[in-house]
Image: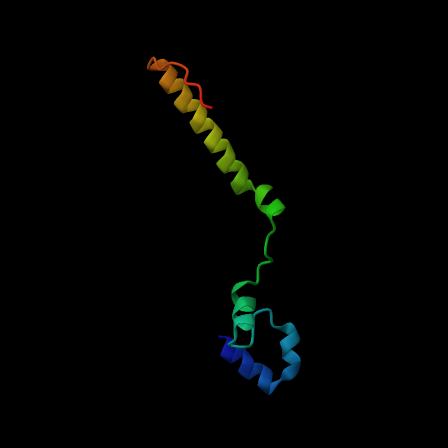
Length: 80
């Protein structure tokens, strides 16, 4: 697809400003094509819904395991 876009740009150079994806076969063009979504930094990942759901699931699973082991008669284990 990058080669097709490059051919269109060769026919009409003014169209390149309207293309979102890359027009070259090098690493920069491929990165532009497959990386059209803006890269996220750590604060965006930590503030995402997926991270929040994963954290809540981990907390719920930990509490559930603690309740089950307590119900089965396991004693308190000190971890240090």
